[in-house]
Image (cartoon, rainbow, N blue to C red; front, side):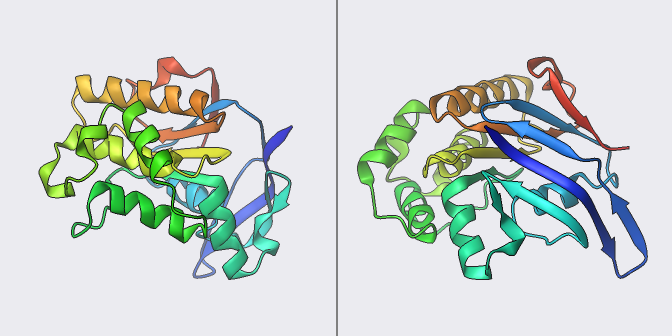
Amino acid sequence: MQMISIKGVTHSYNNLSKISFSDWQINDGERWLLLGQSGSGKTTLLHILTGILKPTTGEINIAETSIYQLTSKKLDQFRGRNIGIVFQRPHLIKSLTIAENLLLAQSFAQLPENNERIHEVLQSLGIADKKNAYPSELSQGQLQRVSIARAVINKPALLIADEPTSSLDDNNATAVLQLLLEQSDLNQATLIVATHDKRVKDAFTNTYNLA
């Protein structure tokens, strides 16, 4: 089944500069690398794919849903249940424990609290013992694992990672990439990784290049 389809997508900033994106189709379970230098529109396309930024023209279908035809409330719910996002930095709420941050992700998707699922995901990432810790008590590598945990907690069909290794040393970069691949398999999710990090490229055969 087709997971993503983008057709005729463009975006204009202040009606001045226009970015056009090639049509793109991704099937269930595929792994793709999104490549592009700064200013090529990589972040814009990621925001469009995740329902954050409505394109000026074109259509985005995810899991057979035209996401920009949804109401704002329905789009938020769709994103929470179907799209997991790993940001370059964790963006966790510092006053909440790791478990509480993950409970919040379930709540945003209007899903019931599931502590068993939280334990399962943290255990699969090797940080179950950090469940009651606060973000300030974790190392950079552990924080990135929590970011992955939050992205997969609701078993999304689509997992998107934005420059997940750019601020990590070689050992942590290798570990995070491996975890993303493992978690996409474990959760049967389609994976898109946006990067210009050469260390990541060898793990992918499908690439979408932005000029």
